[in-house]
Structures are given as C-alpha cells and as structure tokens.
Length: 334
Image (cartoon, rainbow, N blue to C red; front, side, top):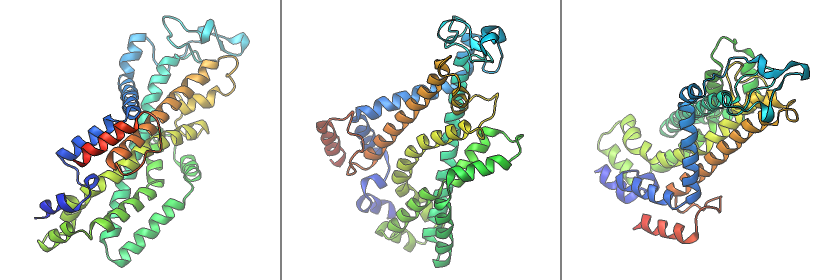
C-alpha cells in the first residue's frame, strides 16, 4: 500500500526509481556544461586511479630525488628549459629535490580526491543519521540532537581542523586523518537538511500508511524516508566535494595537512611560493589542477541539483540553452 502511495504523493525528485533515474539522466544530459564537467571529473578520477601505471610508463616515481637535475649553485633551480622538461620528465622536476613533477601531480590527485570523497562520505553518513534520528525521535531527543547540530554548524572548520591536526601524533596516516577531521567537523549543515526533509516526509500519507501497517521506525526510515532524502542529500554532497578539496589544499598549504613525502596539490603550492619566478611551472601546475577540479565539480554539482529538482533555477547560466532546458523539463513531467 505504501509503495503505491509513493508514486502519487511524493514529488518526482523524492521518489527515485527506474523512470526517475531516466528522467534525471535526460535532464542532466540537456546541460552541456554539466556533461563536460562530468567528463573532466571522470578523467581526473581515472588519472588518480591509474597513477602507478602512468608513472611506470614515464619511468619515474613521486619520491625519488634527482640532485643531478637541479643547479645547486643557483639554489636548486631545475637544469634545462621549462623546468627540466625532457623525455624522462614529462612536466619537469621539482626545485631543490629534483623529484618528478608529473609523478607528484598524478599522485597528488589521488590524495586530494581521496580526502575530499572520504570526508564527504563521512559528512553524509553522520548528517543523515543524526538528522533522521532527530526528526523521528521524541521532543527531548530532537532538542538534544538539534543543539549538537547547531554547535557543529557554528564551529569554525579551519580553526578546529588546525587544532586537531596539531595534536594528533604524526604516525597516524595524514590523508586519512585530514578526511576524518573534515568529515566529523563539517556534517552539521547536511544534518539540518536531513532533519527538515524528514519532518516534511513523515507527515505524508504513504508514511502514515506504513505506520498503520505495523512497520517499525527503522523499517519506515529505511524503506520510506531514505529514498525521499536522496535528492537533497545527493545535491548537497555533490557541492561539498569541491569545498572539501579546497579545505584539504588549504590545510596542506598551511603545513598541517598532508606531510611530505606524500604528494598533495596544496602541499606543492605551499612549497612553490618562493619559486614562482625561477620555476613558474612548479606553482602553475598544481594551481591549475586545483582550479580545474574545483570548477568541474562545482559545475557538475549545479547540474545534478537542477536535474534532481527541475523547478530550481540553475546558478550557472552556461552550457544549456533555454530551449533544451524547457524540452528536458517537459519530458520529465510527461
């Protein structure tokens, strides 16, 4: 009975299924910018996963020093044109150490993307669990969990992260630590979203029908409420990933994030601030990688948001003509 009521009572974005997935994909494809961004993100993920293979093809690794490739008399500037670019070092070498820049860049993608995705998964898990528990609990449980969520939201993320990273022993794997700290300190907003959406959904007829059918709270949450949370949670998660990449880069830039010799784009930027004139590619390459990654994820997140909720206007007026958006919206409502 409750499954039948879902189709009639819940908005399209809140009732995922085979037809809903097709409509979502149709709307997303109508946004050319989102599809280009998705292709860029897929390429970046592929590069990160294939980092060992790519560096093996080059014949280098991200940690080996090559002192013979830097000019010690000039303070460690790479020997050769364009930062020491050659057949053996496709993007040149790092100043002072001579480590291969291509290898450090592709391995840095693993760290930056891995930290951001792990942190986002932690944020989504904690936010949904606390938000749903607050909405389904009694008045005292709701008040307690809501006040905890308010405290988490009010916490200054960067200051808390700096403090926690400073006191944790260096023996703990740094990328994992950064991801966990970001996840545990920044789940408050998605917790509020999950609570508000659950309060709305639990008043609908199909949830009442499930309750009258004798279903327990956990079964109702799993079968009836979580599908309705998919659209807002996925939307916000897609926009959290680029923010988490920026946070990881900022922490590494400040010297408290990922530690050498593990490569990270933020760490490379931190080390490159004194080399922008002598070896500009050492600064430009990780900066360009961060810019492209954050931009692609932001555009993709906006595309996912508008595809899940066609009534919401896109914040990015590029990549989709009005005719295409109107056509996709009509097809989705048909």
